[in-house]
Image (cartoon, rainbow, N blue to C red; front, top):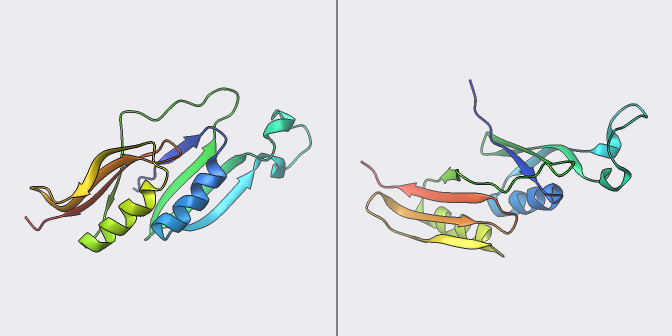
Length: 138
């Protein structure tokens, strides 16, 4: 079994995934827009045809998927963070700095804690909550 977060965005999925690709050193493996759906009778409004129907990104062998929520069905993320566990403090600092660009909030600045060489939490400019963690050896 594998677990892959599926994120929903309020019309900014493509921009978010391009940002994550650069910030995380990830690779976008797929990005399909509503206008690319087969068939001709789409229930999607004309002004949403350029929005993302489905996207898939690979980060060091792990997968995150996403799309733009349609028809007013977007809900602001709450009650979770996407945790990125990295091997070195330098990698943690770099990723946190990259994700912090334009962040809505820095919930905990990246720093050493009693459990981690580096830990930080933020909500990025697209509203996605992240934790960056480089754990100490227990």
